[in-house]
Length: 155
Image (cartoon, rainbow, N blue to C red; front, side):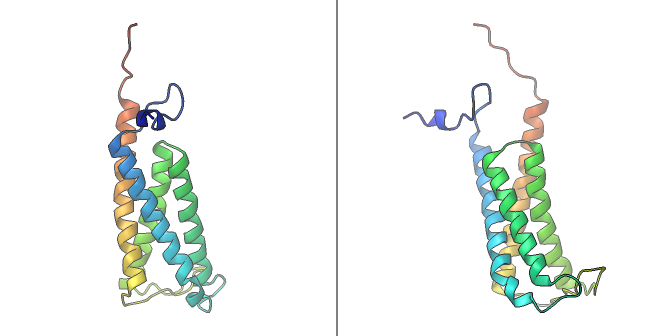
């Protein structure tokens, strides 16, 4: 079995490079950990709500992370990498913001200020941060690949 054939998506579509595969796996792992942490913690926050509960927001974040992970798994391109980056960096930003700043209620969002760390929160922010960095690297790699002129083969 030729492993290189497994890396070819379709005729005419270039093979995935080892760095591309590695970055995609890191992004997917970050998204899956993000989703698992948010789904696991959501029920603890169902009572914290104004017009939408913090638990519902956690479930939305988990669903977005799963959706982005499926996109990264099944599709390639700058848009896919940007979606993954947005989900991961947005999640990390929210964790850090609500850890260090008491934003208070903001529109329909409840006050999610939580000035302490615990294992699930720490794991989530690390996974989101590392995954976001990998997604950003995918954006750069994809941009370079799309801006490099294709090589002609004379047969």
